[in-house]
Amino acid sequence: MRLLPLAFTLLVATILGLGVTWFSVTHSRGLDVVRAGAWQGWPRAGTAKADPYARAAFARSGELPLELADGLLFLAAADDAGKPIDGRCETRIVGVLPQARLWTLTLMDQDGHLIANDAGRFGFTSAEVVYRDDGAIDVRLSPRARAGNWLPTGARPRLKVALRLYDAPFSFASGAADAAVLPRITQETCL
Image 1 (tube, rainbow, N blue to C red):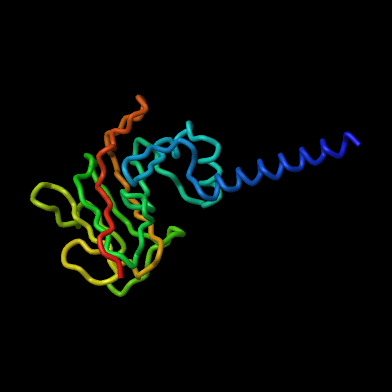
Image 2: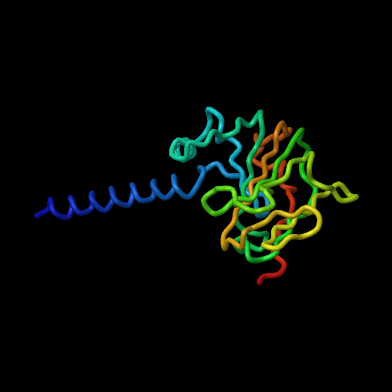
């Protein structure tokens, strides 16, 4: 009789452990996350110091993570108020970017795929974007064409924005993110 409760406990623990591991690998890029406003980055994902969940997530996706010496990826799936980025709304990404030799800003659907559009526009690089007089970027995400730095959303309900900073002088040794100042993401009007 004592074996039955023990077997049940082991079964529940195994299912719970595997479930949490599966969720961590499929819904996260690891535990070593750095947050800067709406943005999340994983500075050690491409290094030998990557946590096991990050390694498993990248092995599962087939993605090759950036080495910290090469660059850093920041993802945002929500605006600064915490609302998911909605492609049916007009969203602005405004601010000065940290020092980097090159950067890219890419708009993706919830699964990380580029959004097909007639404009053939999927993102901007530091060489393409039109900067404001103060050196800041002002990028609009919208289902309708806009003047200036516009990225078409395809009116998708959930979007992600990827900001890659290449050859950027970051230091995460102190635990504080040098990238604390990243552009703000604000949803303005919705259809």
